[in-house]
Amino acid sequence: MLVHNWRAVLARAWSVRFMALAFLFILAEPIYTFVAATWVSRNIYIQLGMSALTGLLTIAAIISRIFVQQKVSGDLNGKPPEEG
Image 1 (cartoon, rainbow, N blue to C red):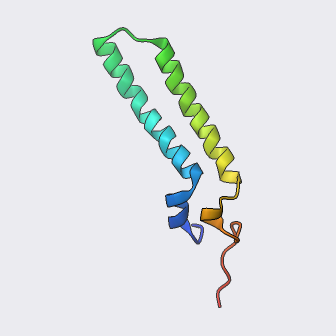
Image 2: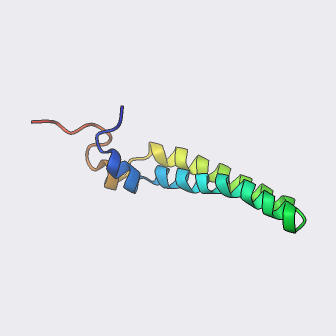
Image 3: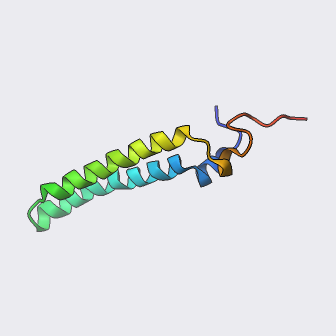
């Protein structure tokens, strides 16, 4: 079941932003590995850095998901608005 303000969550929630950044790093890692293997010698520090950034962004997404964000939740704090 979707939350009542799913459009606002997608547009403004920091957890979604962090997950999108982590997704970009996950996509970039195999591309970098292919390019590095084709053209230059592989650098283990760059691979470790990309993996570490992906992990940190994922942790940031989890942490940011449990905090109230006024632009998304407002005074509702995750509760659906009263109808009527």
